[in-house]
Amino acid sequence: MKVTLENTESAQNHAIYDVIISGAGPVGLFLACELALAQCSVLVLEKAEHPHSPLKQLPFGMRGLSAPTVEAFYRRGLLDQLEIPKRVKNPHSSPTTAQGLPLRRQAGHFAGIPFHFDNIDTSQWKYRLPGSTDTSLLSEMEELESVLTHRAEALGVHIRRGFAITGFHQNEDGVTVQAGDGAFKGQWLVGCDGSRSVVRKMGGFEFAGTEPEFTGYSTLMDIADPEKLGHGRNLTATGMYLQSQPGYVIIQDFDGGAFHNTEKPVTLEHVQEVLRRISNTDVTIKALHVATTWTDRARQATAYRNGHVLLAGDAAHIHSPLGGQGLNLGLGDAMNLGWKLAATIQKKAPAGLLDSYHTERHPIGVQVLDWSRAQVAIMKPEPPARALNAIVRDLMNTRDGATYIAGRVWGIFTHYHLGGDHPLTGHSVPNFAFEDGTTLGELMHDGRGILLDFDRNVSLKTLANEYGDRIRYISGSVKDRLGISALLVRPDGIVAWASDNNPDYSELQKAAARWF
Image (cartoon, rainbow, N blue to C red; front, side):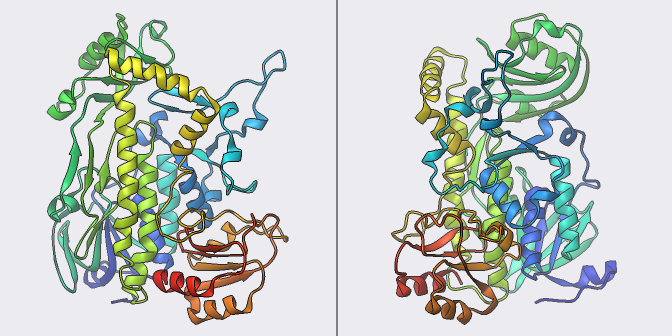
């Protein structure tokens, strides 16, 4: 039930929200924005008293945003609000050496093996137009959460910090959540509360997967003799360590996750012992300022929904941070779920729409977990893994190999199996540029579906009108239409139907009925 919320704590406690979200991280906040954009009332409950954390301000607090995430932020008008993203420079504008030769620039890595811009054949990605958004960006976690918090609050989302969920129960009408000293009611509850999700544990979700191979350490330290450590990523006979900047060290100790599982405090003495053993040096740590541990445990909820309770982000899937795909996977969950849940709440959803959230996102999660496992498999400090590592390194140094790895790392190949004959169906819609300079992404800020008609077909406009404000009809000439005559685009930017020639009106009707 949609309610008008007064600006008082009492009114908020007694309101019945459309959606209660557990967790005010990027995934929970972005989902809240998507729901509020669709005119849903949203309450976000966050257990932490304050949004700031020392880890978010460190270099390993930086996160890579992949192509689908960058596109999602662009389509919602959020990209320009990120003042930091540190853009990965276009390879064609790379700096040169003193001799005037192009300086080879690393574009990313797989299991620590680099791939380079000059080896990537972007012509293989035929639907990425010249005006497409960046394939990847670096953004600080703290800034990302700040931008999303500001947007959520501007859209009317209520965020309560210092409210840890301690229990909930659901019935056919909704969910009642206990948090802090109060109880909150909502039609739906979404757990975006991280890898140790209370919502997942209390909600009866099975969390299946594999156990870890290593304990990872992210640290900020003062080193007495930093010259003893190699710069960059170093694979050794006992593990791996990475020194990106002096004092910022990441370590992987292949102990089967034993130390992380003990939950013991991470002391200077312990980190020094591990670092000396992994680096095979007698390096000395003078001071340990920040240290956190993590593993490559890879688990995934077997279902993303149980009644009126759903999961998204790390609550639905966990894996090692190698390659930095976890944040993007979670933000993709939010973009996929938001419009579907809103349509369900507003009784505008066709049968099965909300079920398609699990159907579409669960396989993407499987792919990312396997991508993480594959990296760990060739990083192990043992001869078979090192032999495989050498072969993969050779393949990645080829043009096709680097292009494939880049496409996977940057999310270019993200695709939903929606059926249909057109190769663009299920993929992200190209960022078409109209003759007046406007791009399609700029026309998607309101979160509605779009029927894009390049041939001004009267029958297509008539169909769009039948769906009222759910489908926006847009016609006009673009600079490069890629041989396409018309497309139906979902609110999340995914192509639901496309036609190159004379549109098959009956197929378009089916697609519109299926999604809208």
